[in-house]
Length: 269
Image: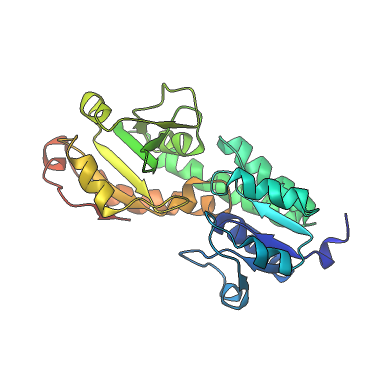
């Protein structure tokens, strides 16, 4: 592999782009996909290569990248394989647990010769997660469903990073007994499992008000909350999970089971 200083990198997911910036390797970016909440001002000047779900492969090829950093949860398998077959070095930013996600960030730090920066980032993530656990040590458990996509509807299941992060905050994943990272479900199961909280991320596959309305047909006591999805996937966004849960808990945990039923409109955090 050539010197990391001269690498031309493209990122195929917002999480990958944010992580490259967080590691101090933004100068190597030749292009990136569009993202909803850019974290670095340099993003505006970068060549855009479509979206994570539909990357512009011709544009990517024209940028002559040496390396592509991809997120399997956000990118299609065929796009990843296409890049690999074209001779581009493909690096995965992945993980179904906190430990795996941190390892993936550290591995990326090694590839980019940013070991110190990766260590600082993962330490920040670990600290943020630990503060969440401390802050809810005496709090009650809230039954929660974390949806990952619609058409068909799918949820974070028992072997997922999102599920582990929920658990840290005493948000009990009602689909935790499914031995997968992600599982397709019938919305009618919501009636049986009776969640108190439904979380709808906007990334990597956005859920909408229409989805919230549809789920409302199957729940009686659920508060529906839209959340920024980048904090629940492997990458630099995980560093904000402590701050996010802190803000969320200030509002969410004030509600009792009874008045959760009165929350008929989605909330945004």
